[in-house]
Length: 136
Image 1: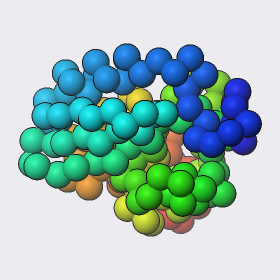
Image 2: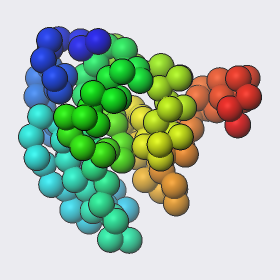
Image 3: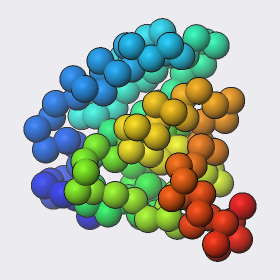
Image 4: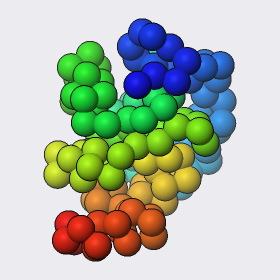
C-alpha cells in the first residue's frame, strides 16, 4: 500500500534521495552509485558485484508489493523502505530472504553491505521474530 502515491513505484514522497546517495558514496564497500530514476539504483561493490536497489515509500510493504516491484523493475537485490512511518511485514522479509533479496531500512542496508550475503542480514528485532517463528 503506497504511502503518498497511488502509482507504482511508490517513490519517496519528496523524491529526495540525497541522503541515500551520500551514504552510499561514503560506504567503504561501494565504488559506484548509478541513479536510474524513481528510487531505482545500481550500486557497484568493491568486489565488482552490482546491487540493484529500489528505494520505496510504501506504508506496508508486503509480498504483493515485492512481486509488483520485481515485475516492473526486473530482478532486484535489495529493497529499502525510505520512511520512518513505513515498514515491511516479517513474512515479506522472509520471502525476500528466501529469494536472496534484502529488505531493509537504510541503517540495516548499510550494515548488510558488510556481509558476504547481504540478503541474510537481520537486525535484532528481525532476528528475534525469525527465531520465535522457527525461521532460523
